[in-house]
Length: 83
Image 1 (spheres, rainbow, N blue to C red):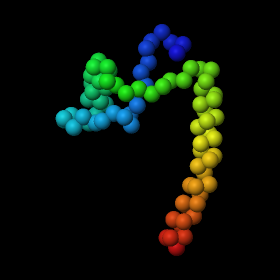
Image 2 (image 1 turned 120 degrees about the horizontal axis):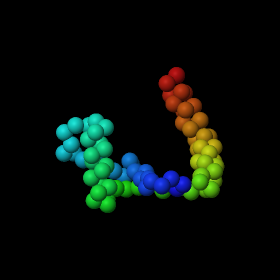
Image 3 (image 1 turned 45 degrees about the horizontal axis):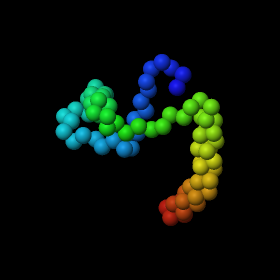
Image 4 (image 1 turned 30 degrees about the horizontal axis):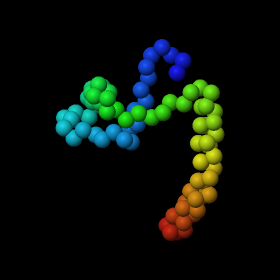
């Protein structure tokens, strides 16, 4: 990263919601994420270097294009089922 700060990008899909939390708001979420970071158990996502972000964007766009025919087929099947 270009910044002078250490940036953490948490992988929210990999974080188990703590069942002992009494409140589900931003403040309690920040405390919970901070505690996980302090314990070095915060699951993180990879932040691509600036030079590779365009490649990542192209790969994501390609995935969307490849998946689009299946999405269309499922939509048509659902429409025919409803009618």
